[in-house]
Length: 400
Image 1: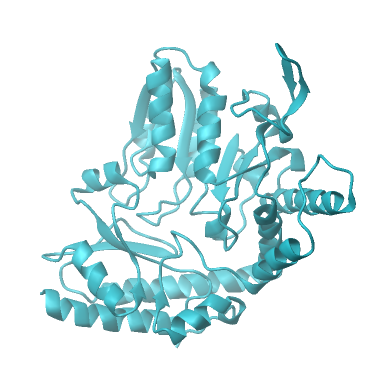
Image 2 (image 1 turned 90 degrees about the vertical axis):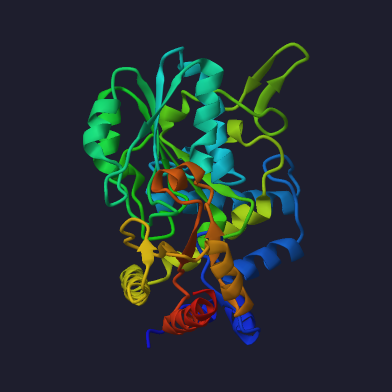
């Protein structure tokens, strides 16, 4: 049976297992390694303080740790400089920051291009921006494998395209999207490019200089890190195009009653007190991940994913959504409502996700109202899948 050498690094799993629980919902939120827990405990027990503003020792210590985390994120993404790393409260906030910060670049009849598979977080900010500016929201269709159709993209990305915002890895279809040709098409038209890396960032290392997008966003909690912290990577020259969108302490350089001047990125886009402990914890999580054998992690994830797909293929009437390539699989079963199946799995201690997965337009395109999603982390193992399939067998006996 396939074992995970990283399982013991995540203390919650032992507790869940003792309670008869099996966690297969990492695409929503990943469990946390002991290294992160120790970092958070250390920060909160050694004396908390605000960053950048005070000169006492606790504040200086917090500021050093906070900015050191920025350096770690820059290294993880191979950014050219830590000034290209902005901390937000999550990928959703980062995308909204971009939608407001880039609003001034759009004129009526300009076009914002997204794809048919986007999570609501990478749909609604652009939808609302288009409505505010009288712009057009263009949706790229998918091919039969659940990939953004490049032939259609070559027709739809044109001279009126100002922004392209697409996901790196679908949270429903589980397939890496053809980013390189898509970004190239947009760049040829002079458009800015945004990549939603919320699902992709946790699988492998992603080189921002090689990817060459203007902006890339992700959330800490899907990368085995804390909740309440996210990252907006932006190329220095692209960040210069952003208008400030939140105002208050930290981000202002000079404030008068009738006038203000603001810091450039990154501080100019980090108004108010940031999630200091979470940022430091994210840095500790990246330290932990950096110590792991990336080749071994990738091989483990691939073997586990193959076992998942192989087991699902044995069920009569099961429809797999798209052609998932890593970490997750969404499916429906003929004659079985996904909510009923999820309920019976939950009663047996199996934690999966059921519903539209914040991708209602995609579900409508697929002709369904929802699906079951099984998603895996580096800590999952063959025993987790064995328990899942046994629970599936018992649930389907009742439902069919």
